[in-house]
Image: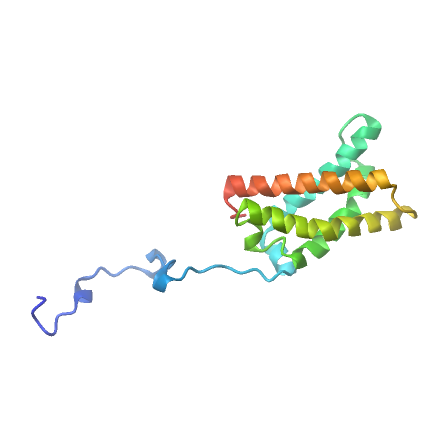
Length: 167
């Protein structure tokens, strides 16, 4: 066969359907889905966004439990969390919080959370101050900054650990 000048080794190859072909790595390139750092990234990763919202609600519920003695999800918890959730959902997508890179590794997860947190949580504090008609007390601001960072970093690290960023 191989001595025949008209022989084509591809004639002996098995035909595969396109769906069965492993395209990743072809020509030494891997296909990577890039995010746009805009609201479409948020829409593409609703589970991740729901977890972020849950962490902000947990922050408000923990704070409320300090005053009432029990963790709850009542109207006051929702009112406390609302400006933080609003700031997060509006601004974090523009800061890369929902791009594929945001959960590619634990380091990337922490980096993107910190970048979003440093903008969104202070904006949430401003929103809370506007809603209440006064500047939040310094201890509230300190506890808010610390607690939200810890909860959001923990959530994103768990996502990377459990599902490798494919959320």
